[in-house]
Image: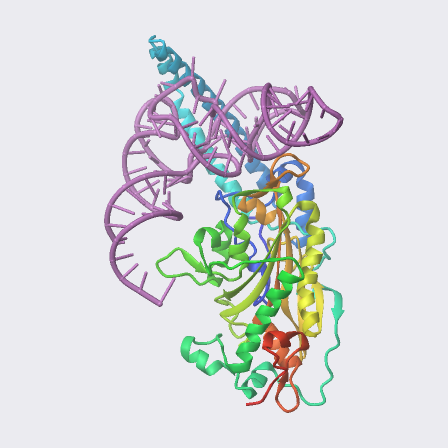
Amino acid sequence: MAALARSRGRLEGLSAAPYNCGFVPSKPGTAMLDIQLLRKDLPAVIAGLARRGVTFDEAAFRALEDERKGLQVRTEELQAKRNALSRQVGMLKGKGEDASAVLAEVGGIGEELKANETALGSVQERQNAFLRTIPNIPRAEVPEGRSADDNVEVRRWGEPRAFDFAPKDHVDVGAGLAGLDFDTAAKLAGARFSVLRGGVARLHRALAQFMLDTHTREHGYTEVYVPYMVSAECADGVSSLAKFKDDLFKLEGRDLYLIPTAEYPVTNFVRDTVLEAKDLPLKFVCHSPCFRSEAGSYGKDTRGMIRQHQFDKVEILQVVSPENSARAHEELTGHAETILRKLGLPFRTMVLCTGDVGFSSAKTYDLEVWLPGQDAYREISSCSNFEAFQARRMQARFKGGDKGKPEPVHTLNGSGLAVGRTLVAVLENYQQADGSVSVPEALVPWMGGVTRLDKA
RNA sequence: GGAGGGUUGGCCGAGCGGUUUAAGGCACCGGUCUUGAAAACCGGCAACAGUUCGCACUGUUCGUGAGUUCGAAUCUCACACCCUCCGCCA
């Protein structure tokens, strides 16, 4: 197939990107880009995809279109003829007259009709397979680039703290508190799991609740609790299962998958739904565990809890009308940033370039938090605007807008934030020379007044 | 695990081989009336796809997939999901 999405060769632990095309089309084979746009303004699509480094095989598409058009017109002609004659049979029989002449005529259609229907089905299947490999078109303002190296920093907040001692990484800090225990986790489940104890476990819980409360009380999101397993229908987009099934944990003997992010269940809330314009925007926040097999990441981030098979995340999601999605994207990103600001964790906001933005996304901001133990900014949130791409596949629409007809909604989501990595960031940024860790001021109420975790 | 009932347009709901081109209601839109609104009355109103500059015409869709038939929401088979009762159970 000529049109191929580039895979992202980058840090995946928190990125929603590989999973963002995980939605199942209600009708298998539904194209993800607007087929009307492809038919009416193909040059614009080709130019947009070229910015991603994706080559659209125009000749192949046109050949499929021509074949489809001929077959479809002929098939529908035959169907119309059959329907008319069959109706005639009904009328004649109703009047008690002889219908054998009409029956003979309609009988002759059958074979050609069947052949045409089969051929049409075949070409439509091939066309859909072709279209499913085509990623979303980046928004015009997304900077061009080939890889993560070309992502652009749009803002930075906070100053990395100047330590008057050598800062440890979270593994050593956690061990000092007797709060992070990877040996026991390994005994229970193997590598890439963690056991938290005492104050560290409480800190982890406090972070999640602090995030939930901030998003519900201050940012207007509705808290939701959802299944942590979803059906293959939800998890298995025709293209995404083929591409991403190795990243998911599947239950043996059942068509259920452990969710890699709450985006899976929550965005599917609106699948096959026609919403009213007045009900938009929908804003949901969901705290859930996330399960990822991390296949293909052998050797990466093996130390500590940066990259785990199981981690908690507070996800924020919005379903909006198309004219509002760009503004909503800025807001949602700001909501995630607010958590880092309140916690006093230095971060920078990156806009992903055209070569790095995920398959389904039209624009993505990554938030990267400062980790003293790594002397680097590391991804802690990814906030994406999918525009109509997911909605079209999910048949998520609204009516009552300008057009009078139902049209696809726009969907957005972002981590607000990844709880495990936030715990890492707090442990590393708030560590003290004596091995204790002070609790960020904003978090103290959720810690029951505790201001410091002492060395064990 | 066992038994039974169900799945129809945005929602509710009738229809069980051919005047269904899916009744009726709700919601929604427009109009009459009214100082304005409500009520009442009149009219409109499924989605998706194709051909077309457009008017319009055609096709597909009644949980999903196969089948029977000239013709299927309606008949047959398989599957999925929901509900009720029994059993088991945190």
